[in-house]
Image (cartoon, rainbow, N blue to C red; front, side):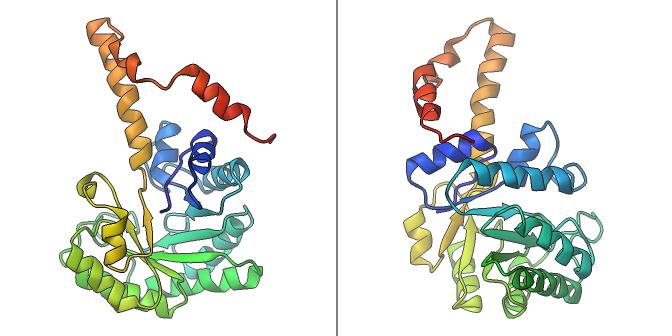
Length: 260
């Protein structure tokens, strides 16, 4: 289980709960900065600084949600992957989404070369950083997301990805098909609002070996905040505060945080 904090405090709390690894969330970080998600809104420098902040906040290994690598060409992906590794992360993910509406995924061959370039950059660094390759077919509304993902994820595995990930897949048979196609390499599955009735054990039974939640924890926090703020504005009342974490509990939590 790889939960996704969006700031130093949430990262520290997840470690205290006993999780063994964490992953950043580009969406959760963007929303905390008052920005939409995506490389067009959150700069590479901002994201690299965020990785450093999360790494410094926890002793756990951290996977970096590095979006499309902040680049189109394999050469630039390799350079940016090197910068990402230098932040101290234990893993990084590269997706095949372009951010362009009329061509939402990189061409197949280019997508493969981008993963191969990231792999090479990690190998050159000398650090054992896990490379996760993502196919965004479900998220961009591909007409045949399963077959698109199967073809690409198999190719990404052959290009050197350590872990494969198709965010948005929810059907058990489709998840099992992906697991089988890229075996023995591990598969990450995203759990969010559209499949929150699933469990870690159910996914494990399908052969899934890593589960993350993307921006869902951040959005859950936003849900509580927005509910309370709307009540104040519209009703002039404060009953939502009854659900707030006690001040003393948070003070005690962060009093145990190591310096720095």
